Image (cartoon, rainbow, N blue to C red; front, side, top):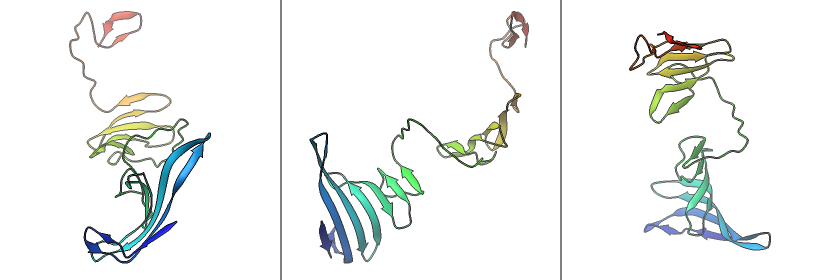
Length: 171
């Protein structure tokens, strides 16, 4: 355990600063794993107060942090949400509980397009929205489209959408 007080960072003296380091090695099946570091920081400078718990790699790069506001970062030092992960997430037995979302703010969105995605309008229903408008609804009895179903290359003798067992009758 090591305490660093009133250290300097980028040429600036940090006042009332405390770093508590826990550093060491551990063993798995009698194999020595390189050291791991944990750091509890209470740094107050003239410009940026920094209070957080972090886990660092051997090079001193923070890989996991818990900030004083409660936000947790994995592979990011500036988490903007309660849990902010940079990189892929893998879960072998996924269980996820979330709110329903809405047509204008679906629960699952893509990048910065926050009004296009998947949401749950009611019990046992799943819906798609595009541009903040309801596009499709799936429930136990039907798949309902709220937009035209378009097809390219259909003809009268070979319709795009036909009946089972009667491939030349349809739309």
